[in-house]
Image (cartoon, rainbow, N blue to C red; front, side, top):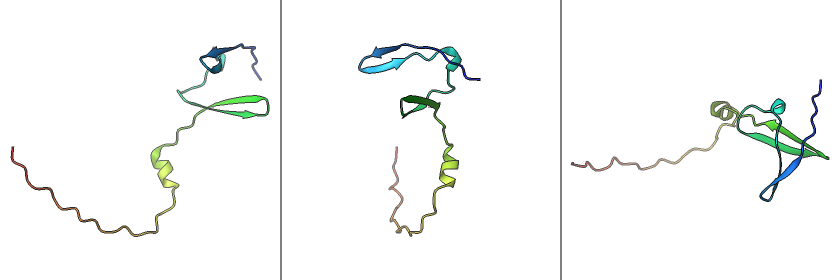
Length: 77
């Protein structure tokens, strides 16, 4: 079942804005908006956990050079 409601545009500075009625509220604080033809589509932004993102990255094939990293000189307080 599709819910429909007429809304009005207003200006917020140089931006055109619309209030989102309570029955259309989205979860979270971020969203993604895209335009398809004459339609605006707003979807909640999907956050990918860092470990999941890293698991999908390809392995590095290069060798890293040795780095001279001496211990710092002792400090007396």
